[in-house]
Image (cartoon, rainbow, N blue to C red):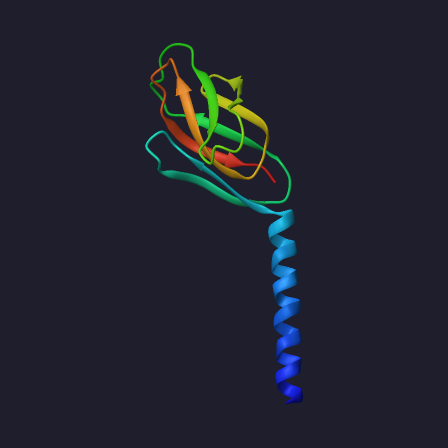
Length: 113
């Protein structure tokens, strides 16, 4: 009887810890325009995301992250260098990279610490 009570208490503590973890952190997932996952990271605060376009991009590109979950508005990126785009303060959720205007394709995605 005593072991059963300790087991129930242990389960309750573990459940509480799991809920606390969910409340303060979540997954950030970046997908490309085809829906392929390019990067995933467990984050507890908004982070910086760097997107690098492949060679052969033509014309000016309008970099954007579109929230797939529908919980946030789009985030506009800044051109850091030709073919390299930076998005600041990206929160958890699933985001789709959109590189409009220059026939650019995603080559690499990096999520900062």
